[in-house]
Image: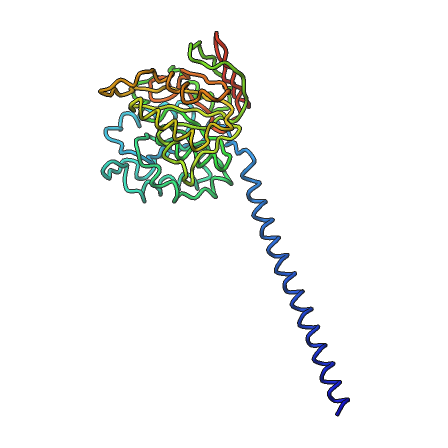
Length: 353
């Protein structure tokens, strides 16, 4: 009887040891699987930290014109002229299926604008996506767009104003894009327009640099960093969102149109309170156009307003950069590293290749 109990107790202890052993093995396997999964995740995030630069265009490439934002009323002549110019550059042009759709303020329904943009993103034969106009509407589709195919086959995305929200998204992927004129401006220009000729040079891989004349409000200094930014209203409206801009160690560009001075002041303070300027390397101020007049004068110019908001920072500030909602709208390669040199006599903005 004693021997029997001893055998039973021994078997019980052996079973306990085996259960503990196999439990330990199971936990180890699961832990290793989790570590492997985290490693994969980290690897995919590393890819996003590497600069993505789309290939420059060449003769015979295809580009797509899409309308992710406002409706294209009476745009036929502008589209035709744009196509003629692009074809003279040796490019093929594909129009988004729903580019002429109308849905109130928008160039078609959100779903159809999304479809057109997504199709252009996914088509590896399309080497650039040119936005027809801004206005409003890109924010309604940005979170539905999938950039998997784009990241495998990056292409130039071109536009400004409302397209800032798309530029911001690309910046999160550390991808370059081009802040430049859209199809809205094509009817009034010719092939020799400086904005257009510079844009062509950028798209086909030429070096890019600018020399800007003096401005008494410029804040003297030198800096280097990747340039990001766009329309001030869009930058302010995306604070706290999935496409909030990251400005640490970056040089920020802003432009605006049709706002009151107090609105510009408020938006700048919003950026300031959100930390946009805390670790910023510099500021380039583009065209602040058609500022509305309030019944009560704000009491200072837009340039003075900007300097007052940013008084505590020591980074260089360049005014009068020719980009924004005016006929002269020079291209900016957003995401590209630049050298900013602001002096009393003239200033330089040099884009690294």
